[in-house]
Image (cartoon, rainbow, N blue to C red; front, top):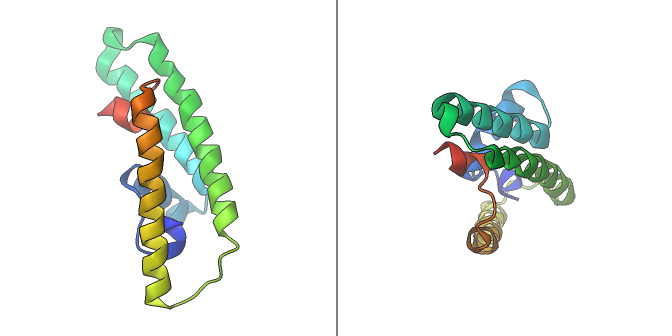
Length: 119
């Protein structure tokens, strides 16, 4: 929904969105590639301190990428408009959806996304 609002995307999606914008690669696939790159970066930076369980970030990244594709598909049915009020409503709803996702994701404390792992 944040993509559809034309007001930007969440920080973790900004680089995949840019890749999509520049190359035409579907955003879910760009997200998966970005997460793979972040895990590789962790391996390079941490070397022997990298824990094998952190490879689960790849699984989470693939799921996140496919969910991104699915979400973009769901919101593709929203009509295009130049009405700033509708764009603002979509941006606020997008922020609320992201907040709900974070609310359920963080307490579970299972496997971090590659973005958090890289940090």
